[in-house]
Image 1 (tube, rainbow, N blue to C red):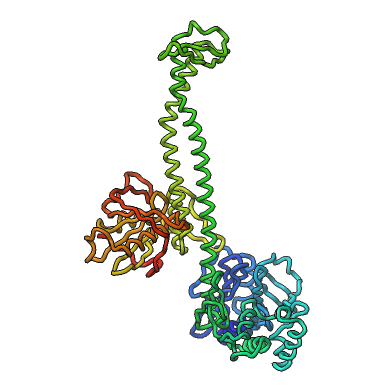
Image 2 (cartoon, rainbow, N blue to C red):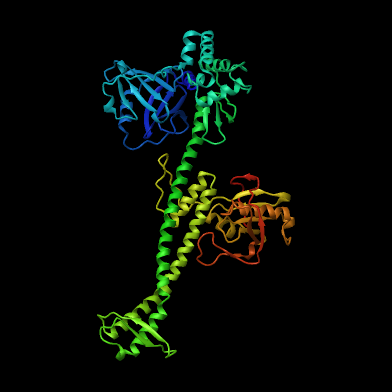
Length: 582
C-alpha cells in the first residue's frame, strides 16, 4: 500500500476524473485524464479480490448504474485528484478530490478504500467527515454518520506511525524492550503494520536469509526496523509472490520461501497477482460447480437404472406367467369358483403339480387373462427396458470419464471446454457463470488441444483431455501408423505415440519409449493412484469408432498389454503443438 500510494501520487496527482463506473457489485472504476494520458483505475472491495489496480481496457458497466455509482458520479466527475494518502501502517488508501459544485463553490471529497479482507469497503467522505455513501452498506445507514478511521488495535505498536513521530533510535529501543519483555512470539504479535508473510520474512532475514530491505540485519529487531524504514521511505522492489500452496499475492519485496516474479511497478504487481488469483478462484468455482453437476446427474441415472433392473428382474418371470396362464385356460372346468389357488398338472410332466395363485373375485378365465397380460408386459419390458439399462450404463461411463477429465483439468480453458461439452450433451443447462465473472463458452468451440510431450529420439506423445478431445485426437489428428494406448477396461485418456519418420515402420516402439507412453496412459486414467495399471497398445489403424457411439468411445483389435506404473513424462508444454493430421 505504501508503494502504491507513492506511485499514484507521483503519476496521477492533478488528474481529472472524467467518468466513474461500477462494472461489478463491489468494484468501481475512475477514468483519469491528464495531458497525454488516460487511465482507468479500479478499486474493489470484493471479499476475496479487494485491490487497487490500473485497467488496460475500458471495463463494461451495467445499463443502469447502481446507487453507489450514481452518488460517486454526482460528487467525483469533473473533480481533480489533489492528494493520495495512506494512514501509517494501514491497508487503507485515501484519494482526495477537489472540484466545484453545481453553483460554482469549491467542493472537496475523499474516496476511502479500506482493503481489510472480507470487511473491505469503499466510502465517499464529504465535508465534516460525513459518510455520503459506501459500497458495502446501504447508503441510508450512513446519512449524517461521521467517518471513523481505522485505528491500531489496543496494545499493539504501529511501526510506521511510531517511526515517523519518534525516529529510528526510539523505535529500536521500544522494540528491544518489547522483545525482552514478551519473548519472540508475543513480541511479533504486539507490533502492527507487517502482514503475516512479511512477519515470517523478518524472522527469516534475522536468521540469515538474504534480501532484507536496507541490507542484512543483525537480529530480529534490526530486521523489523529495516523493513519499517523501507516502508516509510518508499523503498520497494515490486513483485508477485507465489507460495507452494496458495494464491499469488503482490509484494513490495521478494520474500524468502516464495516463487518470485519481479514487476515494473506496484500497480503492475497488483494487476498480475490478482489476474492469477482471479483465474484460480474462477477455476475453483467452476470445478466445484461441474463436480456437483456430474455427481447429481450420475445419481439420477443410477437411481433410474436400479428401478429398471427391478423391472427386468420381474420380467424374468414372463415365461412362468405364460405357462401358468395357458395351463389355467386348458383346465378352466377344474377351477372352483372363488378359489385362492389351484394345483394343476404340468404340460411337460403330468406327474408334476404346479401351484397357481388366483384372485377369488375373478373368474378362472379372468385369472388366466391376468397371467397372460403379465407375460406380455414382461416381454415388452425385456425388449424395451434392457436397451434403456444399457444406454444408462453408457451414460454412467460417460460421466465417469467426465469426472476423470475434471480431476485432471489443469487450466480454466480445460474446465470451460468440459462445461461446454456437458452443455452440448445435455448433462447441464447453459452455463450461468461464477459469481466472480460470467463465462459463456463459445458455441462450436474447438476441443481442448491435447497435452504434448517429447520423448527420446524424436518420439512424440499426445494425450486427450476429455471425451471430445479424445475423439478429436484419435479420429481426426492421428495417422494410421501411430501407436494408440489406453488403460485397459478403465476410464482414461486416449494417448497417441508418434514415431519420427525414420522409425514409422518399426514393428514395435523402443522399450523405453513404449514404457514411458504406457506409464503416461496409466497416469491419465482412473487408475492413476494404483501401483500398476494394465495398458493396451495397438496401431491406430486397428482403432474404430462404432456408429453413433458417444464421444470418446472406440473399439480396437490387435492389442498388446503392458503392466506399468502410472507416471507423467516431463511436458514440453501444457497445451503444446497440436499433432498435424495426415
